[in-house]
Length: 174
Image (cartoon, rainbow, N blue to C red):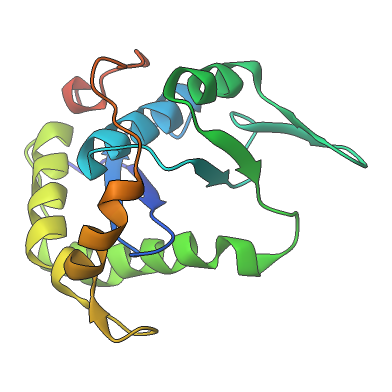
């Protein structure tokens, strides 16, 4: 059986370490859950989170401000990060994430083609992240991502005891 899936990629700016989570939807709850799972994966929260302009995060760009989705603002307050939106029609601010989306498509999905469930897919993704993606050489700085992340890790705020309840992607049935 073929099932359409969506995946969310969250990338740290300095090390380029990233987390990817698959789901059956790209709605607000799945987007928020992907951030929560990424914070757990990284072992902390970045001080600033740059998001694309999807409606679950950004409602409107105004002349001197940005109207963030109230639920996204609640998530930001809960974890203590400052939300920041990409400037519309400026690909440069989205490049880090867009490159990782392409990397997942061209590297993970050519190795792994069949999955028993969404939980199995996410399990395979996390194994691949540790074994392959974290061990890649970052082309700009010529350094292994996992090594660079060790220097970035202390800058992340702890998440202990601050789990934000969205949905459970890992238990969503196919």
